[in-house]
Image (cartoon, rainbow, N blue to C red; front, top):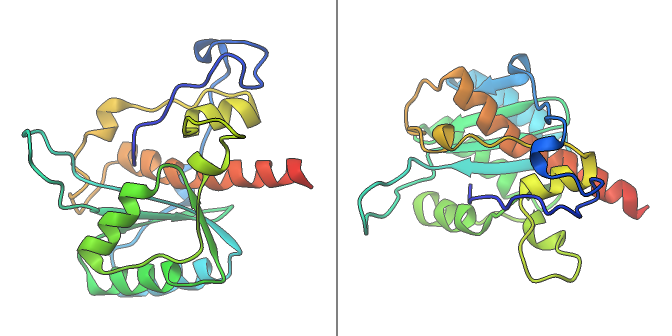
Length: 204
């Protein structure tokens, strides 16, 4: 996930700075599925393949040494309107499930700042994702600056999306994610889907 831009004061929020906006409430922990077995991967795949659009993101373990290259992604997130599925990278069953979804030309995958995510997926896992929409570019409205998730949430929902830098820089390669990590990662994917739905509703 690339860093997000702060929402501008004129992003449809009554000129309120982000700190004055009500907080954005994301997905519930009960609606997040951390995939740790072949059976869970099979069940997740069945749910994901029923969707028309999915929220999509990845997380990579951060690097702290200058010049060191990330060997991510370490986690792949896919979200429906009702649930989010977190796939730790490394198991064959998770790779097969994720690849089946990302290879699908029928299902649209939406997210923010997906350039590095897609490059890393190809470089590490050989996945060439099909039918992907980067909302950072799609929502620019003729401007030159990419639109981040914070800006989009302020624009479409009048809410402030809180992004914890402390959580961003945690170890995403650990097989047992904390609840805080799961909520952060799941929101990254599902907020993109929610923004996409709101954007399309305005265009109807």
